[in-house]
Length: 445
Image (cartoon, rainbow, N blue to C red; front, side, top):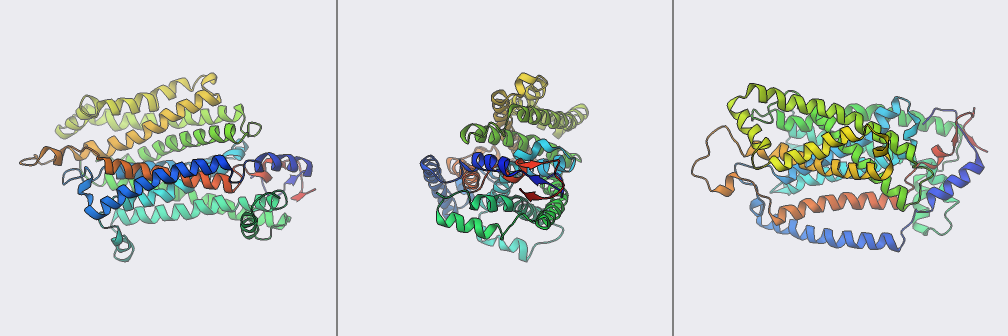
C-alpha cells in the first residue's frame, strides 16, 4: 500500500478486475482437484483414527526417540508460515512496491500453514482430548505454552492481514460477478462491510493494516524463536546451541520464500495472470531468495563448524552421524540441493526466470522439510547415557505407514485451505493493481 492518498482509474480498474476475477469460482477442474484431495485426506484420517484407538505405539516413536516426523512437520509448517511476515511486514515496511501482486498469496500461505501447524501438534499427542489442559493448567515457565500462544497469535494476525486488504476487492467484485452463486455474493456482501471506496475508509484501512504489519513482525520472530527454544533448552548435542533462534528464523525465510515462488508460478500459469506476475517479479523474488539463502548459509556454518572444531565427544558422534552416518544422504541432499546450489545459480539472471526459479524452489522446499527431519531425529537417537538392554527398534527411529499417512494428511489440509481461498477470493489485490500513484485523493473515477 502506497499511502493514504491514492487514485484509481475506472478504465484501468475494469480491466484489472476482469482479469483477476476471471479464475474466481468453483469450476469442474477445481471440483476434481478437491475430490482427489478429499479422498486422499479420508485415507489419512483413517490412519489417524487407528493411531487414536491404538495409541502412539503404531508410530515409530519410542522411549528414546519420542519426537518424530510430526514435530519435524510442525517446525516445517511454522517455518513456511513466516513468509507472510517476510513479504507483508519486512519488505512492505521497507517501501518496496513490487510485492503488491504477491502479498495476498503470501498471506494465504501464512494462514493455511499456521492453521495446520496447530493441528500437527494434536497429531503428536497420544491423548489429544487433553489439549485444553495446556491452556487451563499451563505453566508460564513452559516453552510449550509459549509456542501455543505465539502460534495462535500469529494465526489471528495473519488472518486479519489477509482479510482486511480484501475488503475493497470484495466491494469491487460484487457488481462484476453476475454468474457467481448467490451464497458467494452474500458472503462478499457481508465481508465487504458496506465498503464505498470513501477516502476515510481507505485511511482507516491503511492505519489498521499498518498496525497489523508492525505487530506481525515481533510475533513472527517470537513464533520461530520459541519453536527453536523447544529444542535449544535441552542440553543434547545437536540442540544445545545459542544461535538456534536466528538459525531457525533465517531458515524459515528460505522455506517460506520458496513456497511463495511455487504458488506464484502456479497462479501465473493456471490462472492466466502473466500480465500481473511477470518475469521481472520472478527476478526480484529470485534475488530475495538468494539473499535469505546467503544469510541461512552463514548460520549453517556457525551451527556445524564451531562444534566440529571443538569435537566434544557427543558433538563428534552427532556430527559424524550427519556427515557420514545413516542420515548423511538426507543431510547432504538438503545442504547441497536446498542451499548451496540455489545460492550459487541464483546469482545468474537466467536462473531467476519463472520455470528455472520454480524448479529451484521445489528443491529448496523439499530440502527444507528434510532439514527439519534431521534437526529433530538424529539428536534423539544419541542420548548421553549408554543405551543398554533395549530392542533395536526402540533406539533407531523408523517412521511407520500410519505416521507417514498422518503427516501427508497435514500437507493435504494445507493444500486444501490454499485451494479454497484461492478460488473463493481473488489472489491478487485488484484495487492495489489499479492504483495510480500520481493521484491526490482516494477515489474511483
